[in-house]
Length: 258
Length: 276
Image (cartoon, rainbow over all chains, first blue to last red; front, side):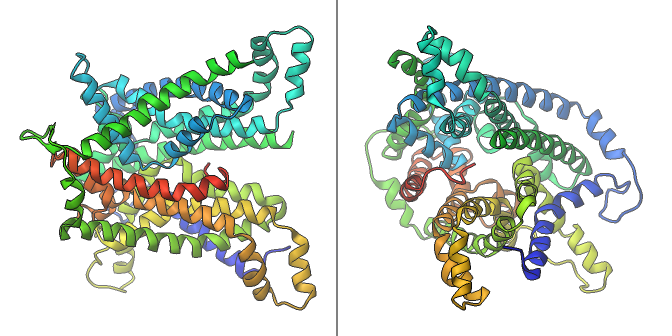
């Protein structure tokens, strides 16, 4: 079935709608004027963004949080997917689905309520640790979904063969199943990194004074009024995260073709 | 066999229980309590937080959220279905076209919302271009309007429609379409009477995902609506921060969760297609 001309014309318009706002943002991040008339190519706003210590500190926080959340959520999610593949647990599966579609704002305030309740009894405060735990929570479901999809195509008899040949359960999992899952695990890890790095709603609710993230700074700058440095830093974020998502989808595709 | 499975599921189970289900339980408990003088929560138990939803001020916000979610879902269906059809028929280029939908979707929700602020503001690109072309004399007020909020939501959640619809269209039995053409149906009639009914599962999944996401939206109405066209999400956030009325905010969240859970049932029956 070929595409009709009308449908192709429509698709061009739809892709323009999806991509032009980001392209325009990127183009104007190189504008020498701070207004929306093009006056010439310049790296002024990139220099300003790099010189901004608040942005640098927030980027460091975001990277640290995203790395920690990626490691933890990928481990918990991969093990969880494997456990569910052995035998499904309706209780865990349903909770995972629910956590995927729960509005971020509800997840954020419920975590805030939990933290505040715990802090009544323990002398802890909001900070990097509360943000990381929150991110691990909402990212684990992504990992389970991606890894489970790969496990559905995995031949269980390979594991049985390993155990018939004398491997223990653990050895069969670590040396036969896990290597087969590696591309899906890597792809899931990239998704977690992107999701964690970009999150604003939940993070802003559970962050402390010492854990301001990059999205929080960008949000504050965007609220305050027009600042071309935001265009520059936004362009960098889109390019970096877009690159990661391309790698992630390439990993998944290679796997589908195997 | 079972011991390994047990150890594999324990971390995920503990995480979901401790950081998802228990917090939701706390929110449920708070929604039945009374607000304290300094913003804390106190007994006695009361239904008052729920009955306050009937207050015209809050009912208007709930109604607006529902209305926006329905409008956004309808627009996403109209824009997303033809795009999914195009991708499904693209042959070898399918993956490329699918990536072109997914890359901006994953790249950064905050930046994508900010991009529309940049385009829509009074001195933004759209107004500058229209002024320079002489189409208008005064800048149009585009940002901080219902139009901006709906546009931002459509832009943000369109891929949620495209993906599940594409997934069902891709699996569609081609011989049914050929049979329809052989029996004399025009391409339009085939589309209406064969393709659309057969892709109903994808349309349903996509519509539910877009609807749920729009209903619970926070960032888009906040940045593009500028506090003038607030939705349930903003009201919840407000109760937990500035207004410090946690019980009422908790009741609002619970209502939102009930809607989401109600819509999740048909979605889960269909499996997870399109969730990622």
